[in-house]
Amino acid sequence: MTGPQAPSVREITLDAGGVQLSALLAEPLHAAPRAVVVAVHGAGMRAGYFDSCARPGLSLLRLGAELGYTVLSVDRPGYGVSVSRLPTGQSLADQSSTLHAALTCFARGHPLGAGYFMVGHSYGGKLALTAAAAERGDSLLGVDISGLGHRYAVDLAQLPGAQGRGAWRRHWGALRLYPPSAFRLGRSLVAPVPEREARDGPLWPDMYPLIAARVRVPVRFTFAEQEQWWLHDDEVVGDLVRRLTSSPRVDVARQPYAGHNISLGWAARTYHLRALAFLEECLLARDAAVPASHGEGRARLR
Image 1 (cartoon, rainbow, N blue to C red):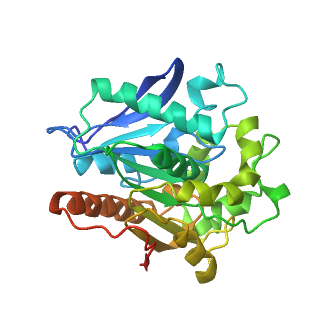
Image 2: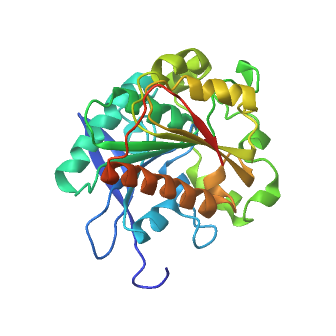
Image 3: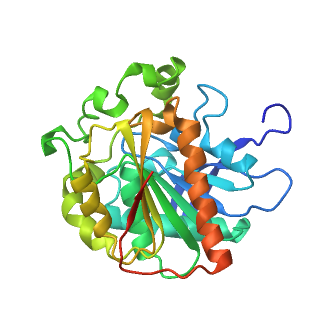
């Protein structure tokens, strides 16, 4: 959708228990939202990661709003306006608490429809799972994650940190996977990795089993064809899925023609449509009261 009737993206600020978080917001034009998609960016990026303007149709915010959802892309603690208050960032657990506080603030002024659905990329996927593990109500519909596994494919010393963003090629893969303007526009999205966040990075393989066991909503993982930060062979992915013992459903997808930064590439629209289709299925399961068998940890590879 283009022209004057196309959904717009605007900047907002959320009060997260005294911490101000900047965010991007897109809302449906003519109806209340069916649900709210909460998009959470990765390390060294900003909320605009989910609003690619390199080509029409690549933005998750605009696509989601066109399909009847509110989409809220949040600058995680230590990024955007929160840098002045949190110059070294926050631990993963503290980021989860801050995000929940921000969503409580958001709910006071915006309709939620059926509830929240989280889309997390890379480190943002860690936060989405951690926040899901801490969810005690029924407002979270599911979690869709790209660019995240649980066993690194690199030495820990190569991970992005406060002193650098890691190997450039691992973030992007082959250049042909991205519109030419993606790299120029992407410069405005790049931000330093906060110190506390960088310290947490190597701990994820040990943190994941405890977090995964507490996630009680459907989860979908997508691995890009040229994902280079995480191991994602069948054996490793099988173990990744088995750890989600309380989730009623776990799907695993492979995204062809994509590198780690899927939402900035040519494959962005394809991935976003599939993520929103997973949300549709989460809504269908809730509306139809489909019985969920907990503890099976089954994966469906698509």
